[in-house]
Image (cartoon, rainbow, N blue to C red; front, top):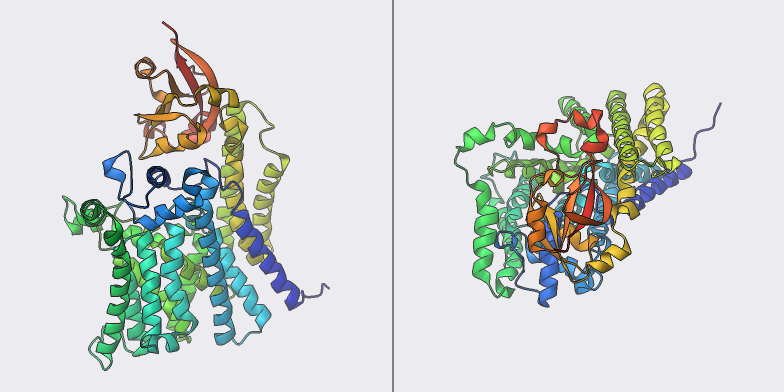
Length: 578
């Protein structure tokens, strides 16, 4: 009979796993092919040109329609991290986002630990395990991995906005009763978050705080607005929102072109999300942009841990029916989720990623209900993990076929896939291992996903030093099939003058001769076995991962011909001497 693991050793093991997962976010952080939103390169473009100008403001872009697309704090962060252009690498640009992400995971873990100690009456070791679990779950969400690591706004805004509610949940009664200190600090924190994202974020934050004051401070139902203390609580919420908008307004005070900020950001970027030729009712119930996107957003953002989020909601609902006591700290988490979802049902443009600022709260709730959830939810997550690992294996197989080199992946990569799949099956058949394996396998899949792209962030995905030396200071025409995608070549062709040419599908671009009439050098992508052109000289080539496929190919092509669906060869070509 095996002895149970001592509580101290068990808590230490979970802390080490959480630390390992956090450090795992560094793997391939500077790579060209990490999971990300394509808009990352738009922001990198604006930050680079603004840094080149030598001034903090105004923001600079080669395109008027993508200049004041986000508040300046996002760009200032990159300018400082990149040394004003002296250390302009993707790793340096992304590192601040990762630090924000680590800090958010730490906040979620510490809050969960405190909540377990205060409400469950468990010892500190059990509470430490729950805190580590919250951090692990948050870092294992696909939305965290995709939108938290790149040079985007999600990690900073999540830290500042969700941080207000994590802090409130730390001591709800004391902070809600605060007359000046909490409203002031909360307003400043929300203001910094708005300077990363938008002044519009005061709407969900204000709604969430109003619900907290109503439900937790006044102990009234949300609809019982007219009550004693209504004015005082309302003034506090309005003060927080006013301070936040005041901090955001510093942009107008500091920018030498405030009229452009108003036209491009306030009117174009924010008010534009409410404009549509169709009625709100029609859009609200449409498939791709309807309110269903928001209603399912928290589950979708969880990625392969979707069943755990569903299981948490189901278990909480059963507890509500059975009149289980819910702590005020937990209620803060639910109210923040509710407020953010309601707020983002209002615009005509909707996306699940708009709910990312509440995903730390989701992770806290999953950790709180971890022991109470039925085993079926964990088993379903393990099924998803096994299928995800199989899909990554298929992508890896396509890479081997495309490059023609079975050694581009180390045996450890294939061992990781085998481990994730076999561990998933072990967790499904062995009750005692189900939950621990689920906790580890969620990030195991994300690590495999990063690893499968790793070779293309290395030598086979770059041009040779000789080719780079040849194009120094020379104009090179590069393909652009999405907003700002040409910016990636600033990191791949360092020192060259990048000039974009638009094409829906770079691999099918045909008129190479026209490109070479206006430039000596050009980049042309082709499928495996196809040559770039006939009237040009090939200088060098590299392998690339296709980011946007032609819908005509169909998703089935990813299974039947992964080598051409996912991969292409990019050639650096030169115009032939006349």
